[in-house]
Image (cartoon, rainbow, N blue to C red):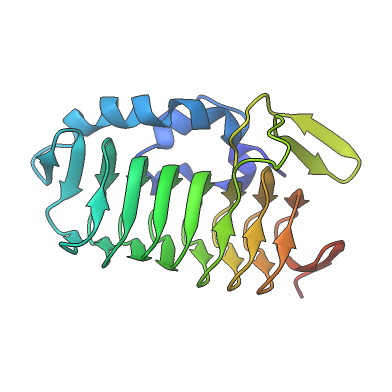
Amino acid sequence: MYTIKDLYDLDHTLAGEYLSQFTYPWEALKGIKDMILALGPTLGDDYEEVQEHVWVHKTATVFPSAYLGAPCIIGPETEVRHGAFIRSSALVGANCVVGNSVELKNVILFDHVQTPHYNYVGDSILGYYSHMGAGSITSNVKADKQLVVVHNGTEKIETGIKKFGAMLGDHVEVGCNAVCNPGTVIGRNSNVYPTSCVRGVVPENSIYKNSGEIVEKQ
């Protein structure tokens, strides 16, 4: 339930070929920067390199106050709003929203992803049509600075990496002010209640109500 094939339809991202090399999505985090640098020059005339290693589709809207850190790609019909801060290494797909005061760092956003209000998304992959409510964030470093482990019930999956936020499958809805702790994996079509503190693996087609209470969608 936590492989790339389980979580994502790779037809809805420019990173599809790149992601298809891996079994688990967190394995792709280390190479996002290099992937963007290789992909950018191949994008064609519909994209403009507005500064070195920053490619923006001609139909995208980027507010003057937004910061686009290299390398990054902003897809067609995407809106990067007032005060957005794209630190670096962000591949943002088509028809996305990167909202006011949102910060992105080392991420892949599939097409139709919305991070509209006061979100921090770091070292994470957000699937097709996933949505993060206002103030929801991905926490990407453990307090003890140890390597991140993915917990699936009693199963513990060693990732070998220190910075790992969340993997949101396609059509995931994260409620306002929720926190996805390091190593969170949320399956397709699942919902997270507002103000939740999410850990471990949430199965697809589920509702995460609070710690330890996950119910199947009816």
